[in-house]
Image (tube, rainbow, N blue to C red; front, side, top):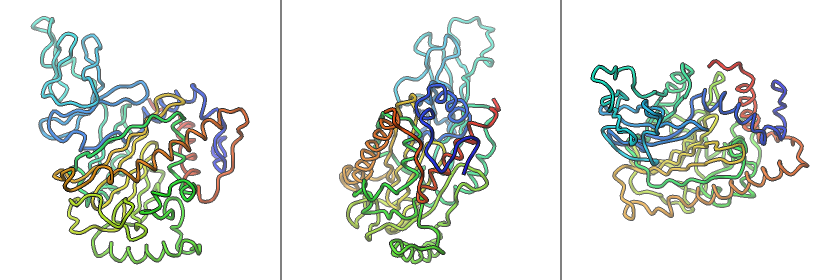
Length: 404
């Protein structure tokens, strides 16, 4: 399949991974102009809590206001341009610039303009807002205005799938950041297929079938090595119907930017662990017993997530430069779960910590190869069709005329 000069049956030409000019174009036409997953409500559980973030060169923060709503603003004071909040996380009921003490409330309204005359028009110098959308407890932002209107369609389809986990009633048990020495697209391409899993992810393939992650969902063309997965899937679908858990595959409908599906866990596992045991004794939402499946959600351009009955794992990819990428992983448990009593942090994080390290090695190795001088685009297998889909979406974003 050829898409506007990019043949999506092959990997991209090397310049798409190494060019600073293309990287800047990606920031402008994708990361600044589309809805991007950046955080979750558990990052800012209480009024005044904030989390500071960066996309490319743009710095902003999210903060919960007095009414419980999530607001977003560029991290810059309207006086002399000093950054307003410092550090990754914090909490305050008034935002006070450390430079000259200009003060803003949680709605971004300027309350104190120190040094200005009494008739200074405070109402004209509030913080510069960004677009924020919360979907089932996941927080997305768009740094351009007006933001794409497809967010409401995505929300209507996704929220029923996420609702059983009651993500706003969770807390972050652990966050791990990895800076990978590679282009961000290699991180995403690696995530969008599991052809590499059997030879690289022994821990992950204890609780997960490789089927379903880009293959194995065609019930009319079952391969012999996938029959066990398909039989388990059919058994679990009857159970999910009885439990009222949405499970049907939604795969980038009508050109939208997400894919979600519920999949059974392998080897009698009930969570992402190496044994058939829970990772956290406190279950999420209304789950009354561990349920041996996981809801998976992928969003373009930068996230994937797994929802289990006892915990959630979210992943966000932030491009730092053409050859450096931040991969942020968070493990969420019930807000009242107690470490050392309800969960052991090492057991909770073990499978994905190992998997992340393995994927880092693979993505970095691919990047070194692409930069070696002998690279030519390579053919993608049928099992890598989600890589092809991502590359087609990616090409569409770069070839669209920028709106802003």
